[in-house]
Structure formats: structure tokens, C-alpha cells
Image (cartoon, rainbow, N blue to C red; front, top):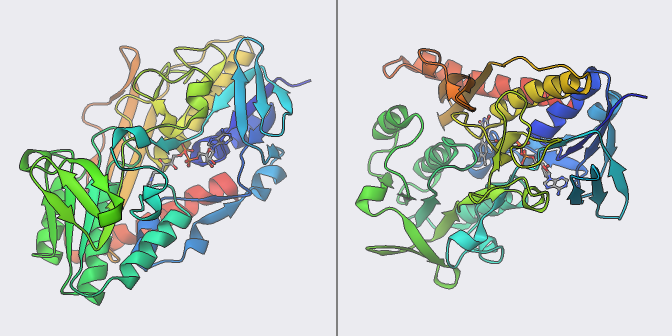
Length: 392
Ligand code: FAD
């Protein structure tokens, strides 16, 4: 029969990989514990009360219709020698090749005071679902005049522009609903994705309302105290009415169990095939992978999955995959009718995925409101298109 491929994780990376592996005529089993998937892109609009969480939720029937066997279990063990995955219910799945696409876990050890209990008080909302709803409710319940504080980690983390989109949309919420309030963004970095576009928009739309504190200005949060809703930096203790703590992250735990994560917590891969540098026969895609210059985005996860699926099919035929080119585009909303974007093209170079010089770029710094409004529409069209491709 056809060669067997097991895919762990039914998000943007794993869902796409399963569909395209099936398209290459392989026997594909997708392992995903949750019966539905809740997408992060556009979830910052849910935080700001502009969108319902229902619109973020997708089922797996589309993948079943495409011929993928979907098993709602957690993968609990990977034996790379025996080429076998063990599921939470004890069932074992043998594979010829394994695609690991488990996304991220919060690295709770990396920020003193922050753990899964603290996240119930100071939500991260960096995995869409109940955490998103919790942060939205906290903002709703806050009195006008309250101080919202966000903590943003150092690189690398899921969705580089995501914290700044969130800051923008929270600022929009405060401006329109609680105008005496303030947002302080404590950042462990001095620069960030689409920075000039964000900052120009903030100056125009949210002057005096949104304060960004860079690493050099003492923005790095070194610990948090959930009991007193306090964020601690080297120079200050900042008391919040609502605290959104986005902690450092790492590849989801199955990556370490499968021994494909290195000391950074992320998974080194070959840039042509996405095969693990640590364990042959296992490919790692999406946020869990170290994809060089590519950001951890749903767009990138989808692009990597297509390249990886083709490479796996080629390798299983005993042939050598050709070097790929990959694209990423990330839209961010600064206000409901104000979108900005960044695009890049990537190719293997010196063993890693590198930026193709001169390709890509960002939205123009000076553009009329009509241009920003169009990009806000494109953001939603992109979301509808990619979710239809993966889950439709
Ligand atoms: P995930 O989507 O997290 O999927 C991983 C899946 O693996 C999950 O379903 C999980 O249940 C499953 N899993 C984990 N462990 C196991 C296991 N042991 N066994 C079986 N299954 C397992 N990206 C964009 O491109 N554009 C945007 O506008 C954008 N906006 C964002 C806004 C926010 C607020 C955030 C937080 C992220 C945003 N992103 C955006 C980033 C995007 O959500 C991620 O890059 C993307 O989800 C990565 O896909 P993935 O498949 O690697 O991981």
C-alpha cells in the first residue's frame, strides 16, 4: 500500500501538511487532541470586542472529506528508532515518515511568578480560546481610567507583529469605550516588526493613550506578581488594572519528548526538507521549527507545510527534493479600518532559510486612509482564504 505518514498537530502547519500529503497519494493520519481548532490570526479583534470567537473556530470534517484519517488524541510518545507514535489512549501508530507540527507552549520557567495559575489572572491570550475570552472580559469589566499593562517577550516567539497589533486594538477599545484609561507596553526588545508603521499610526490615532517602553528604557519584565497584579522591571513595579503577559515560548512539549528540540527549546531543521537535524525521519514545521529568517506565522506554517509535504513524497519515492522558495505575508490591524502588512521571500542558503534580498517589504509609510482601509479588508480575505484551504 501507500507509505504511511503521521502528522502530529492539526493547526495551520499540520492541517495543511495532512491535506497536501494526501494529495501526493500517501496514507495520512492526523493526530490532534481537540475536536475543533481555534485560530489565533484576527483573535486580537476578539480581545478588543470587534469580532466573535466563533468566527475563529474550525472543525476537521473537511480534512476527513479529503481522505485524511483524523484521530482526536494527544501524541504522548515518539520512538524515532522504531518509527512509532504512541497516543494518549495507548494506541500505537507506525509511520514511514513523521511530520511534527505541535505549535508552541508557554515557557513558564522563563518568567518568575508566571505559570498556568498566574495565566488565569494575567492572561497571555497567546493560544486562542478561553484565554482570549478571559482577556476580553477583563477589559470589559475594567473601570474607565484603569491602566492596562502588556508584557512582550524577546525574540523568537509566535507572531512577531502580534503584540503590537494587540496593543493597537486595545488602544482603539480604550479610546472608543474607556477614554480616561491608558495602555503601557513593557517590551524586552528595542525594535520590532513594522515598527515605523505602527509608531506612526499610534502617534496619529492614540496619542497620550499608548505608551511603549523599550528594553533600553527599562521595559523588560523580569518577574510578575499575580496576587497584586504587578509587573516588575529592573527600575519599576507597575501595578495594572488588567495585565496581559505574553511570556517567552518554546516548541510544544512533544518536540522535547521526541528529542527534536535543542537547548533553545526550538527544533533545528534542514531548510530543503524540514527534516529534523537531530532525528532522521521526523520533519518539523510551523512555529515549533527554527525556520531561519521566516517568522512564526500561520502564513509561514502553511507555506512550510506545502514544501515539506512535497519533500516527504519525493523522499519516499527515493528521490532528492529540490531547493524551495517560500513566501510570508503578515497583516496587522492598527484600527478596524487601518491595516498594514509585511511580506518576505525565503530560500535555503548556508544551511538555513534566509531572506531573498530585494524581495518583499512593508506597506508604504505615507499612504492615504483608503489604502489602509483596503489592507484591513485584505487581512480578513487572507484569513478566509487560508482557513478555507486548510479546514474547508
Ligand atoms: P498551532 O496553530 O498552534 O497548531 C498546533 C496544533 O498542535 C494545535 O492544534 C495543538 O492542539 C496540537 N498539538 C500540540 N501538541 C500536540 C500533541 N502532543 N499531540 C497532538 N497534537 C498536538 N499568523 C499569521 O500568519 N497572520 C496573523 O495575522 C497572525 N496573527 C496572530 C495573532 C495572535 C494574537 C497570535 C497569538 C498569533 C498570530 N499568528 C498570525 C500566528 C499563528 O497563529 C501561528 O504562527 C500559527 O498558529 C502556527 O501554526 P502551527 O500549526 O505551527 O501551530
